[in-house]
Length: 195
Image (cartoon, rainbow, N blue to C red):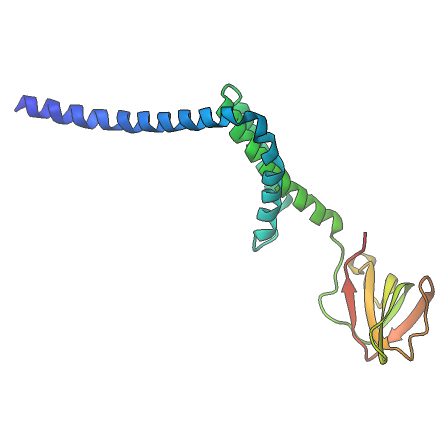
């Protein structure tokens, strides 16, 4: 039955070619559609950049700075690999916009990083300047201090600013005033630096 084997091998050999031909046709159709919309593709750059930022904040763990750099390099590699074809260049550009958004979010996070108190502190002496006085209600007030020294914490672990909640009757301070006080029974919590 040589005829049957020849027919079977011809059938199996032609199947991958048909699948490959179908994929090539689909890619060709996508490329034609993208070329027709080429004057409007630049409008997708902010969307892709924002999607990269969203991807960064959607992560459950803080990524390393090396991850952001690797994404940029991979996107640049895609651009170089696809520079001969319009579709490859568009895919590489889209990947670069996504990676740039991700890297931008990571860099902003790193620039704003500051020491943060792990828990509330009580019974510590704080030296600093009053940046903000907020009266919460008749009984309570909150002040934001730009810290010079906080207890016995080393400077590398000292937050830049702290918030102190205290009795409104005892809070007789104004913005810009230098203070040195001991907070024995009141909670002291760190706040992020304002820009």
